[in-house]
Length: 219
Image (cartoon, rainbow, N blue to C red):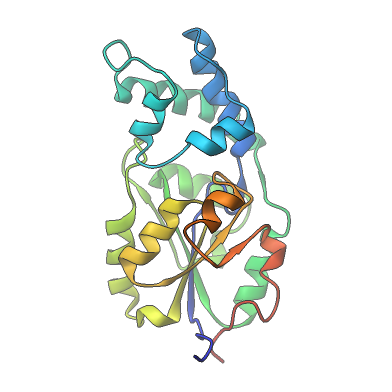
C-alpha cells in the first residue's frame, strides 16, 4: 500500500507540543491534598488520566456529592493558570513544526484547552504564524473535541487521506478516527507508550522521532 502524502497536520497542544504533564500532576495534587486523598505520581497519573475528564476526577476519589465536577474544574483551572507560563514546549517541537512548514503542508491545533487561553499561550511561544487555525473549546470542562475536528475537516476541504492528526492520548486517536484521518501518537505526554501501543501501531516516543521519511508529505 502506498505511503499517504499529507497536505495538512492537525496537532494536539497539551502534552503533545506543550510539556505540561508534571505541572498538571502538581496542580491536581493540590486538590487531592486539600481533601486528604492519595496523591499522584507519574505512573498513577498515566494509568488513570483519560477522557471524559469528569470520569478521571472521580477515579481519583473525589466525592461527587461534595465536589461536583464543575466545581473541581474551576479549582483545577485556577491552579493551572497560576503558573501556566512556566511550562515549556517539548524538546524538538519548534524544529518539527518548522520542518513540516518547509514541506508546504499547512498546520492547525485542535485542543481541549479553552479557545482564548489557547490563543494566548501559542502566541506566548511565538508559534501563531505556524498555524492556519487554532481550535479550542468554549469552556473549561475538557469534553470531547471530536465534533470540532469533523467541522474543521469539512472546512479544510481536503480528503481525509491527506490529513494527519498528531496527539498524545487515546482520545486523540478516537478523534482522528471520528474524523476519518490518520493518526500518530507521541508517548511523551498524558498517556504512556504501552497504553497507546495497545490500541495503535503508529506510536513514537518523542517528537524527534518524527524524522524525515516517517511522515510523507505531498510535493
